[in-house]
Image (cartoon, rainbow, N blue to C red; front, top):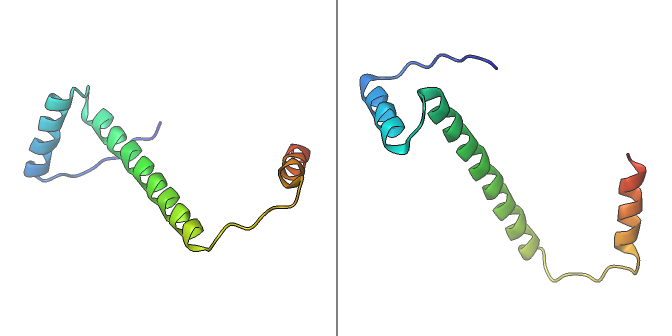
Length: 80
């Protein structure tokens, strides 16, 4: 595990301490790790929404040839 030092204003330190107390975190480190996980999840969800919107905006679906997914599965299994 890596250690990172963060400098906070007194106001932000009070806020973090309050969050730790109210939300039941064991430490400031646990609180910050949770914030980072939430941010990563949020970014992944936003990317997924963007990709879905692009897919919907790309026009009507086109039919795929028979066996298309089977060929994809075979190609994927050959990569292992």
